[in-house]
Amino acid sequence: MLSGKVIDTFTEYLYGANLCALNKKGGGVRPIAIGSCLRRLVAKIACNFERDVISDYLQPHQFGFGAKQGLEAVIHAVRTFVTHHKQSNFILVKIDYKNAFNSVERDSILNQVKLKTPEIFPFLLQSYQKPSLLFYGNKTLHSQVGAQQGDPAGPMLFSLSLHPTVLALSSELNVWYLDDGTLAGSPVNVIKDLEKLVSDSKDIGLEMNPSKCEVYYLSGVQDMEVHRKLETILPGIRVVQNSELELLGVPILQEAFKSHFDERLTKIK
Image (cartoon, rainbow, N blue to C red; front, side):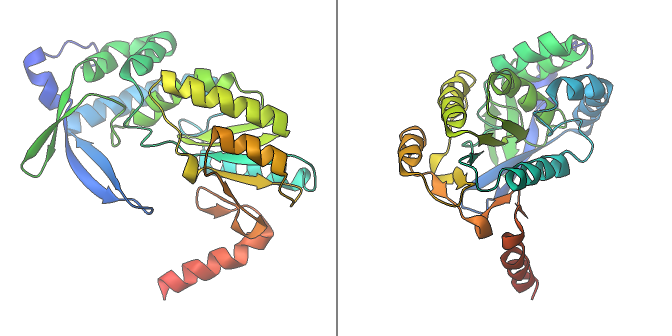
């Protein structure tokens, strides 16, 4: 499998998966692919072999693959930035993509794998160059686009495909945890980056979800001219206040902690 020499007759099954449909918090379905044990084992071995090299390449911007406590690193980086620049004219924008893992183009994925991890390219080429079968109940679908959610190599593949776009951004803060991006800094830089991000993301099959993107004004006052420009790029972008600012389910500012924990406590009760 690592040499990419599995007989073609078997590949659509071996690199296929059973589907588990999970409900998303905001509505819709998140399909999780549960592949064969052999495929997942080989993918884990391949990722383990490349972890350090890819992690060094992705950081200090991406922390969704190979970064120890990457989630915590992103949250603390954002919290430190916001606290340090409080009352400035800086803005913070949270990026949300539509169905990101299942939409990223496979040619983009494979091109980046060939450039950055040529040792495991034969395996991933055979995994993703042709449609594979997905089984859901008595229905059969074809997996043709994106990195399968549930593939152990999925986070690495998605991060690699997105990274050239991430590197081209110039905001003072530019951090990502897989498809969750956070840009912060001067309005001029952030707006310029958002325009580039929307355009470049389309080239790799990704589309923004404007109504789920959020903007936070570090001064505490909404700048109407800046917001008008943001609305032209991300129509329906939501403005959040101190008590609402969260990242990946974690409150950023002290004002947000009480309401956050009250909500969790109510759910537990």
